[in-house]
Length: 487
Ligand SMILES: [Cu+2]
Image (cartoon, rainbow, N blue to C red):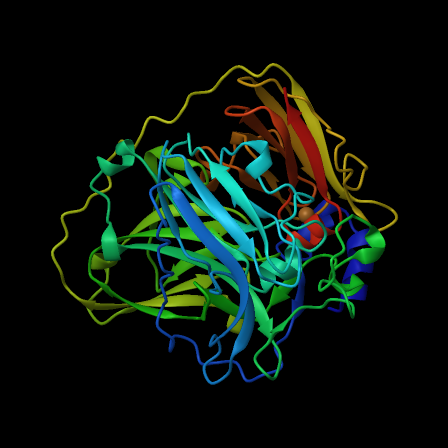
């Protein structure tokens, strides 16, 4: 269905009819590549380099353009942390205060957000807190007073997060702690960060992104709907037809017939996935966005919306040696249905286990208030929160440091809602129990069309200006953001 017909269609139908029509799981508009797509499962899975500190507690990373081979036989210019895509993985310890000095050698301003970080406001990547192009620098301070978890970092520039993340400005950051160290989980080569995203490519191998001419390569810093970075036909979100894992198209990884820990991240601009293993198998979830679960949860499938992470263990000893085990996305048809493949190459010793008790997450704190945040497209066609497009510096809430609040998130479409600083528990979906995949403390929750999701958010760590926003990056760029201030 074309963008226009679907827009008319969405406007004309209520949620129930929409779900019945089978469109309810689609969250963006497909942008097709203009080159021959590579054969799936031929490119080996890359694992990003681990960032090395220049001295204890200090990292330096340069954002620069680079040409890399993504589609075999072509090159793609990326905007990358360290000139790579994904950027290097930061392997960090709880409580080990680090500084990451970012130098911007790109032609566009940037702002780096550590997604899931309990970070002071000046280092949180506020969208107008920009590092100037062509040599600007900024020291980002990360106290990392937070539990072991799978985090990631990405650009958060006002109005241009979508195109700049699409072009490569994203990487993963792992926080570890003693509680996690004590568990017999797979590690080393059997612990794989998997950054999943979709992209579209032009004939010459460059990334396609539907920007109006001249947008995105300017020094523009303020917000204005007229400066939208994406073509109006794609305001629901941009989906590509090539699925990348750690920057490689439909890669293949050789594994031993043992347990592996997979840190799944959906780093797509707009695409949602429902991940399954084919020909079958289970994900044993051990962690959510914000750290280890109290106890493992088994899943046959995992829905994952942009920004969300799942920390899972897959036991490849369940498959005969020689098996191909394919990670698929059952929400997609065609080439985008495949994500990546594991080939079980040989048997090997395995002394790992998934204990019945994983961790002691923070408990619930009684909420002091309930607030509503309604995510909706306005009659003018702007993505809004509580009826307003983003107004920098105008907080919609002032929670107290150390308190907890129920935030009631309602929606007219797929809006993966991300809250900076605060971590939350999903309490209810449409007044009923949350899904099994909602388990644990999170920072991003998939709010589906006409759904009301109640979360219990804790405001710990720092006072100051933070934000909540939709993590569909096209919605975010088209103003679906709001400030809150922790007082
Ligand atoms: Cu949204």
